[in-house]
Image (cartoon, rainbow, N blue to C red; front, side):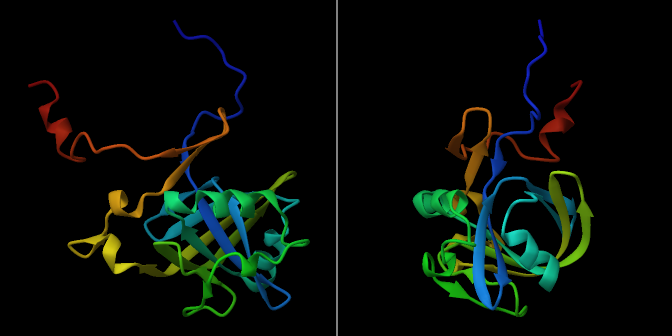
Length: 184
């Protein structure tokens, strides 16, 4: 039997990402889990208004999404605990640039994406950013047959309810295939 729970949202766990932006000419990063896919080349970021990084995204209309591997958990957690208004986060990890001038990326992250801001929704407590993925960069060693292999990326997942980071498990079925056995 189901009972009502007091959670605000039940969509956890979610992947962790380090969002890169530029503020006053300096690279800055923030750790978030409230991100998603809006369309095949569109992403969404939900970020509390108090975050320093928001102003860089709004001002420059560019940002990066960096997917850290689970061996980056200490740096990733630290980046999410401190504000770029007080700490120079560009010194924590090695920064590189690609096509976009104001979307700094992280060398240590196995997958990085450069994005342009398409839309900004201004809610009472949060900003919702909608971005277009312009370029994706990946370490060669995390590719299988030319595509990103999630097992090799080793991304972190965040569970807000338990305040824990999780590793992904093993695949257990083939998408768009296992359902063919329904009603057989």
